[in-house]
Amino acid sequence: MITVSQDQQLDRRRMALKQISSNKCFGGLQKVFEHVSVELNCKMKFAVYLPPKAETGKCPALYWLSGLICTEQNFVSKSGYHQAASEHGFFVIAPDASPRGCNVKGEDESWDFGAGAGFYVDATEDPWKTNYRMYSYVTEELPQLINANFPVDPQRTSIFGHGALICALKNPGKYKSVSAFAPICNPVFCSWGKKAFSGYLGKDQSKWKAYNATHLVKSYPDSQLDILIDQGKDDRFLLDEQLLPDNFIAACTERKIPVAFRLQEGCDHSYYFISTFITDHIRHHAKYLNA
Image (tube, rainbow, N blue to C red; front, side, top):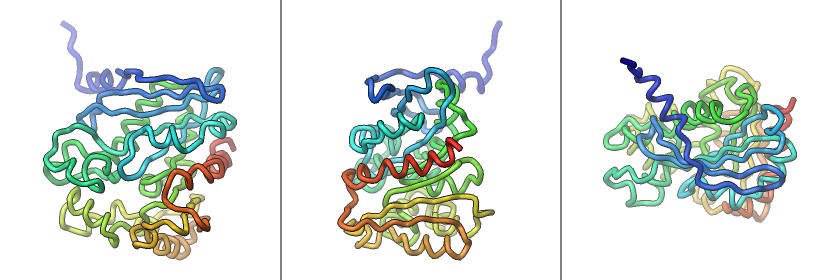
């Protein structure tokens, strides 16, 4: 009698990808897949762009993490990244921003907490801790899935978008480079962060520091992380003090961590802003991924 270990069962679930769509784009293929996530205990979708160079060899992987209310579709349909990714030979992977359809009480009651707002943390509080483990999903499970199913070079990986600063700062050496558009830099001091962290992580604010970029950068072990941040000057969330980039920049300066912070005149928080500068971000990562 053949027995299947728990690890083998998990591996089989990871490998079981269901293709949802495939579209030719700048010589490559923009695909969307669905799979059963072990970390999140639900079905998840992710988008992946396969560059033309993947037909002849392994290519770098660049992970995009979307912000509040987004699915895997927002970035791939609105950012205009495909041409630059094709030219530089990047796989670009864009997961959903949270678990979906988990029937967790209260997950659909507000736009900034629950479904669409996973905040890239591993929840420790009931009823969220069973499903809302986006940090482990995007840093461990999803890369394992990508590495096993696509011709990517796992030694050449970078990350950008919301949550990217957290993932990079918590994992020194894992990512070659990092960048972000209008990130929530100091969530322990903004209303979004206080709401999400108290719900997912509990009332003990000392536990919140583990997902607070401004705190994490203060203990980052070296300066070998080149950070690019673009921020719209007319972003209403910047004006409402939800993002607090000045706190993060001050912490980077104190630790001598290189950060290029660009305050873009007349820009807001939309994908019009992201699409304007997305090629700059792809080039930023190409300096390290194609070095």
